[in-house]
Each structure stands twice: as structure tokens, then as C-alpha cells.
Length: 330
Image 1: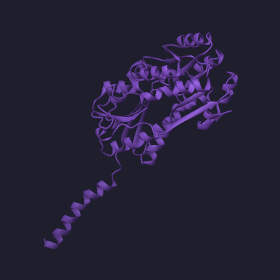
Image 2 (image 1 turned 30 degrees about the horizontal axis):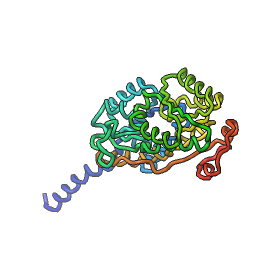
Image 3 (image 1 turned 60 degrees about the horizontal axis):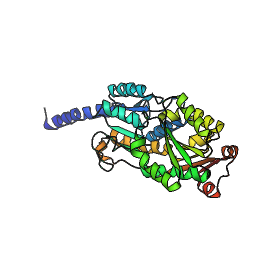
Image 4 (image 1 turned 180 degrees about the vertical axis):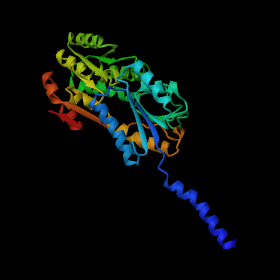
């Protein structure tokens, strides 16, 4: 065989595998999502859509080059643990976790699958990461807020309802275990500054929620702060109706509560947190490690005021509060 023919043949053989590889379809990646909320919660569905939209903007489309395995835990601790194991058994490339109990359940199940979390209050104290700038391990993400921010809820409560001299913090210790260790010191400092007596109101059932809010209604000057964790989020309508029925002014953690009839809300923009998680998932899918991605704090906050509810409670919303509100609901 002539040398020129041999080189041509060799070159064609070498190029053939490259051509075959170029024609092969893109490998389907797998992303697990464990939502701590109820599947029928409009707000939670919007938050998930923000994440999906963020991924789409980065070139990831469900069913084309990524498969989304989404599970909804509805604020049930046992269900959270079951679904965490189920998702880990699927061996996805990365998992999006939201809320502290969901992240804790996934942390128990795997120390190898990359996990990006959102809506987590105390990732260092919970043992999810070693530090915010250098997470270590297989987790990173977006923490919900610094503990000092919790005092803002009491400040807003006394601003919109100056007669409040006692405030109850309602939460489920099973789904919000961080309240006493992470938030309570800042709550206590804010209570002393505002001369407000602080009441811890842990609840585990609808009956306990009703008892707690009804008892507040019996005493003039009582107010309420509701932490929007999975348990209370799933009982939003119940909490809002009980606060209205018992004439109790209440502050909530996200604007969905105010839109649904709650008096006032303040907190990070949750949709933005979910959208910001998409680039982290994208970077992991492209080879980055969680240890290389620092935990980030929220960058957007929103205040919402429901004027109709204020009038029903006999409250006049201060002009200073209206001036800073992102949303005023008539």
C-alpha cells in the first residue's frame, strides 16, 4: 500500500469515532428536588417554577438534557425522611433541598451527593457546612437570614400595633428546631429594647395552634409573630383566620401571608432565593464541587401590608411603614 493511501486510511479511521461521538445525544443529567411544603401551596409552586426557570436560562430543560425528580413533603417530618431516602436512592447528580428539616434529612442520608439548599436558617449550627465561605463536605447553598434579622419582626409588630406589650412566637419545634438556639437570643434582645414580653408558643397540631391564638385574643395588647416554616406554611389559612377572629395583630415571614389576609409580612424574597440556587446547581452539573461554592446570604427583602386587615383590627398603618412597603394590599 502506498504511504499516502495508508495515511488517508488512518486519518479516516481516527476521525470516525469522533464523528460517532459528535452524533451521540447529550447525556441526561438527574436533579432531585425535595420541597418541604405542600404540593398545593401556590407560593411553593411559584418558588419551584423560579428554580426551573433559572435552570432553563442556563440551558437545562426538563426532559431534554435533565430529568427533574420532584418530591413534596407537606411539612411532615416522617414524610420528609422517607422522601429523602427515596431521592438519595435514585442517585441524582445533585439535589435541591429547601427548609432546615429537609436539609437535615438529606444530610443523614448522604455525604457524597452534592446538595444545594435554600431557606435554611443556621447551616453552620445545624452541621450542614463547616463555615459560610468554606462549606466543606457535600453541601452549600443559600441561608435564609442572619439571627439579628429576627428582631425586625417585633419592631414591625410594635410599629403597626403600638398597643402590643406581649408577643408570641408560634412555630413547630419539629420542623423549626433552630428557633430556640438560633433566633431566640435576638428575639429576646429585641423584646427588651421594645419593652415587649416574649412568649414562646411551640405547636404540633391544628388544635394547639387554635389554643395558642385564642389565648392571645383574651388579653388586650397581645400580638403574634409567625415563622413561615413548613408546618405553619401548610396551615396558613387557619392561622390567618384565627388571628382575624381573635383580633390579634400578627407579623409573618413572607408576602404570601399578607396577600392571603395576614396583616403584615417581612422577610427575604423567597422566589429570588430559589432563582439564585439555579446557577449553583448548574455549576455542579458542569463539574464544580459544593466545597468551592460559598454559602450566601439573601440579597432581597420585601415588606407587604394588608390595609383591609389593618382596618378590621382597628389599626392605622403608619406613613413610614407604607413608604417602605414593597406591596400594599387594599
